[in-house]
Length: 482
Length: 98
Image (cartoon, rainbow over all chains, first blue to last red):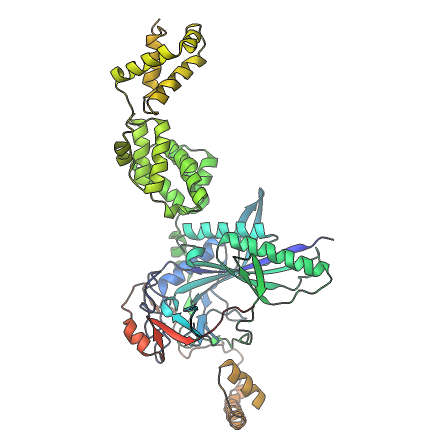
């Protein structure tokens, strides 16, 4: 008697525009409070909104990428409610009812979970504006409001309840973020709030109608979406197994405690009294306009993977990892442009760089090193300035400090020793100190050569040119040229 | 359509308005008569007339995605009853309660 998990997501995405949805205020993140506002986004009497064309085009772009039906005519509505983050006392949004379709409906996004490909249905894509931001200071019985975010263009994406596990929800969000980043629709950063996700969760016996759902909010990363959903599924299962009912309610995720709890915010505000926004005329999307938008869609992840495989002669596995995020693929291609050694650059990125990011839980955008610096490191190895062994120390230092490989090599005296005279001395000393292995070499045991090379490398702190050491050793022991 | 004092009370609560019993009765009467006046429109034959929310047939009025100057923050907070370091100060609202 197991239960089936049913999850639907509501995702808000900030569109990549310079200015707000209905006015020319900047959308720049992190500006001092209330420095990016005007009569329109403050809802001052008489101010009139005008739609940002770019925001509509980015919405259309997302609709295309998500295989949605774009409606020839859509319009905006007022969603009325009272909250201090909403200066107009209504939010301009696109409401969906009979003769008023939103921008686009009924598409899908394909995800892969455990090697299985699945299509997750998209119910609708619509445009709206963001609200202001509330800050709750510890002291005093007050809240602070910053209206910089008020009127910032948002796109809401609502899925059908097609997801069957927290893992699938995570896979969906990762894929959605990847696609939106590639399409240059949004930066898709949950930590900056340019991608936000609420989830509807319910359980049912397979084949039965949908169970009572709860809406989970306040999840600040893709990982916390997965954790919150796992918690909520377990909580509902426990209730049902005890014969109790799930209450339809909004629940907040508490990241620190790892639990969801019922919240009673805006509880009487369910009647939003939607009506068409009289200050805005409808949006009409002609086939020509849609075609123009379609032509402007940048290269998507699958296409970029295939191109990277072909253009740089890389395997599918490497290419797949490199296109994981657009920033990673951009970093790779910028590095290759600076020094055309794609395989070596890919190896560093998927090896040391990726390990460093994982270890420190960072995104590639947060790296201290630039693509040009990684390219320079590869060049230093290839032209023999440093050995591959030393390069690993250099990249570790680069990742830590952001210094250029050249300056690290110079500062720490890591330049590879290719001076024959200097190395001959070390080779001689190693031969004197290791009579046993030398005998083995002379007896034809190849492995012992590697041991002696290793000894020379050790005495030079890895700075000796290994190929040169090899040759000098063989020469000295009479193994060359005869 | 008749608007009852209960409907007025509900709309007032959604709008965060406090009304006396007398005001509720007055507004119920006034709103009812406004709606009755508009109800005359129901008597018109509208078959074949497309629903519309605008009196003029205009679509696609857009602006380019260009940043224009915002208001100085001093001017913005001067409009608020109370301000603190650029923020507008309001009575405490909690987004979530346990």
